[in-house]
Length: 465
Image (tube, rainbow, N blue to C red):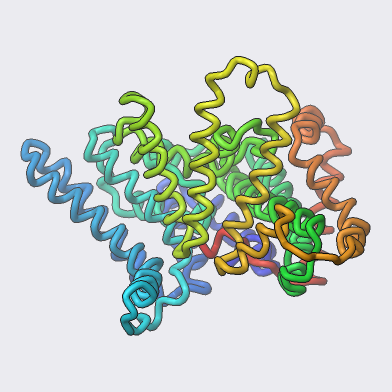
């Protein structure tokens, strides 16, 4: 089930909220858990045993970590069992066939692909990382183990954040799962966030993404360099508003139920460097890798060469987390190189005095990096990057395709660009309680519904990760 569908908006959500509000405090987790099971099993019931097994294993291991507090050896074994179960399940479903294909390609072997895992269990990358954070935090003594199986399972399977995050640590949300404060203002603020996220998804991401999909259908060999850049920018807008829209909707749903979920984006396209960009993009994933990989490796405390190595490990793992394909390693490698170069150039004083140039640099690098993310075929990726860098010899075509695309999508690209700036956000926060804004949001909601009825649902892009 997807947030931006008629069945969710007019059946699942109203029924869930009604049951949730009517339930006494002691039963709210039960209602949330059962409704989240329905949400998950609506389209992925065959993978429910996988999730249930991971929840049960980690719940029991969490209890054991505290029960054997005086036995470090046993605690370490329990932690390894929990990590092996969670990461093993993720590896099997997401990467096993990729490894087999890579071995066949490198060694000329003929290992057959594993049947039945061509489709990922919904949200496995996200809920696995949440489970891992719980287990590691309990082992470190940073949070207490959870005795209530229902509360722990609700933390893992809670439907607003189940499929695409945000990735939340148990310590940050456990209090909300015990005591909740419900106010009319909280419900209203949650509905506003949800509508803004729905509009970002339906009216911006789905619309501006059409340009990128048209270029894919046309074929990369026949497009001009300007069109290649326009399509790359369109994809950059599509993936941002798609994922940011989902995150806003998740935060809105959480707030409607008295649960505060963390923000996942902070105007990333206003950044002045790749390093700054990924401090603003998918922030909960970045914080996860920083807390559980980068800092344990030594962070930046052991000299520049070790810092560069630690960054390489983080970015290769980030690439691997996103998908089983060599294009993701190209994406992660490009970003790692940029961040390393930025660290070195950052030592120069004149770099800090630049105002516009860093933004131009970012808008050159990020769309190119997104192409490494979007194009899974490495040969086609090379063709597209050659187009973007004007490296295709003998190309004599005109730029009519770019002018046509600009005339069709120019206004939408402009609106999308403005929505990336703090201007609209500041205006919204200033006027959000005024009647005209409430009327506008109501109009946006019903316009989104009309678009969904007209065109159908377009699944969220991060569902495939």
